[in-house]
Structure formats: structure tokens, C-alpha cells
Length: 121
Picture 1 (tube, helix red, strand yellow):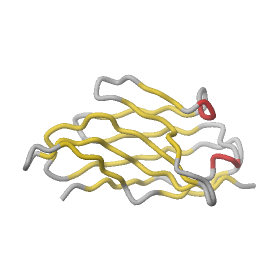
Picture 2 (spheres, rainbow, N blue to C red):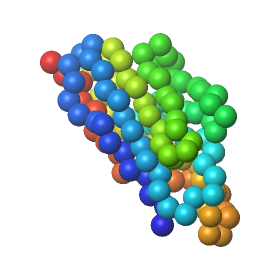
Picture 3 (cartoon, one colour):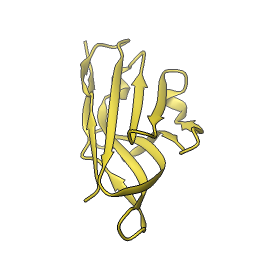
């Protein structure tokens, strides 16, 4: 059974930093693009950052220059370093990964349960 488990959320003051982690586990043959998304109350889920298996990255305009996505392919991990956090960054952050299952070799989209980020003084 494939699972994505996020960690690292919490409460931080404006201007502070947090580092989110997401670990993929299960019968994994390959992991393609990994990404972070967020959803604030009353808003749609939005892409924050994504990284391909080759390390190419893409960011939402709202986080460019403040957030950095990285991954450890050997450990099936993806990270999101968030600096200079703003109140508008507060949301439930979700990890997503496109994974080829080592069992049936099918490719599917997987989501974590989310980790809460609160930015408040």
C-alpha cells in the first residue's frame, strides 16, 4: 500500500521558517514528479512547488525566492524549505507524488494527509 507521510508543520511567526518533509513508502518502482500543494480555508488547493526526478523545479509566483523544494531520491523524500513566511502562507500543506507501483507497474497519483502551517504573531 502506497503512503505519503508529511511532517514539519506547525506555528511560526511572520518572517520565520519551517521545513516540511514528505516520505513515500510502499512497493515503489519509480517516483516521478513530487510536489507540494496547499489549501487555505475557503480557497481551492493550489500548487506551491514541484520537482521532477531529474531535479527541475517550478514554483508558484507567490513563493518564489522564499520557498525551496528538494528531494532525496535514494530515500524517497521530498522537502519544502519555507523562509520569510507570511500570514497568507498559512494553510494545510499536502505532498503529492507520481509513482510507478512496483507490484502492478501502474503509474498513479498519490496524496498525503496534509500538515498544518500556521503563521501568526
